[in-house]
Structures are given as structure tokens and as C-alpha cells.
Image 1: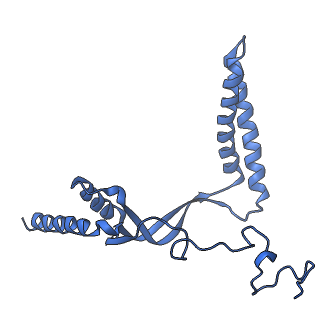
Image 2 (image 1 turned 90 degrees about the vertical axis):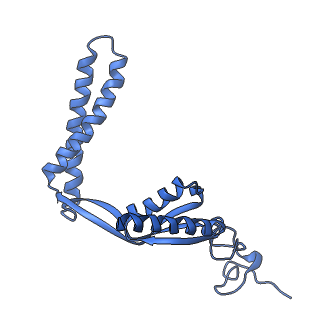
Length: 195
């Protein structure tokens, strides 16, 4: 039996290559761990409740903790995630220079303080010079960076992740205990609402 040699015969898509595949992420496959659906993440878990907002899920975990439940075996999992980018305002070259000046002033203050520690003479002047030079360079870099975008992003924003629903999960062996405690929580909540 002859074996193929040369670079073209070293690997063929869709075939098992054995030792012909290089090692590494794209090479020889490793045996899957656990159930074959990804890395093992710990003991199996069970969802004991699903809530529309985070404070409701947090109240449930807090109630479990107050009743001596081992909450280190629980988690709050946000599902149906949405990325929300809130636009904070328009970005102009002047505003970019102003923000750059602020950042540069902080860096200049830091450098001025470092040099001021080792100055024998007027250390306050060294700090002020560092602050002013940092602000000037920061303003220049801020304005140049904004000008280089060519008007493709003339706004500032802040991004956040929001979940549509929050599930409280616990380890499977503790699920019955958690459900019993939640039953008591709901009974005490309905008794409070009725009274």
C-alpha cells in the first residue's frame, strides 16, 4: 500500500487524515468532553422560575438566601438579549477636541505629579506645565482623530445589553428544595396582598 506524499496530498476536505492533519485548532480534532455539546460547565441545572425583569429574579434569589438555601448553587440567566446603543449627542471637531483636552489634562497631571516628586525647585509649576501640555496635546489628538473619521460617525453613544427575560436556575439536586421555598414565598406574598 502506498501513501500519498507532497503538500497537495497532506490534507483533503471531508476525509479523515489521521496523522496527515496538522496539530492545532484547525488540525487534528480532539475527543469531545462531556456530552459532546461543548465544554463541561458543571452539574446539571434546572430552571425554577422565569421573570420579566432583573429585580424580580433578584428578589427570588434573595428570598432563597434569607431561608438558608445554598445560593452559591444558583444563577440568574438573562435570555433574549438585545444590544441597545443610546445616542448621547452630536460629535463635532470642537467637542472631540474638548474631550481630548480633558483626557490629556488628566494624563499631563499624572506626568506632572511624577516629575514634581523629583523636582527640587518649584514643583507646583512642573505639575501645572504637565497639565497644560497634556491638555494641548489631547485637544490636538482629539480633533485629528475626529477629522480622520471623515464624518462617518458624528455622534457619541453608550452601548448596553438588555435581557427580555431572567431565569433563576439551580443545581438539579437542589431544585426540589428551591421549589418548596418558592412555594412558601408565593403563599406569603398572596397572604400579604390579601390582607
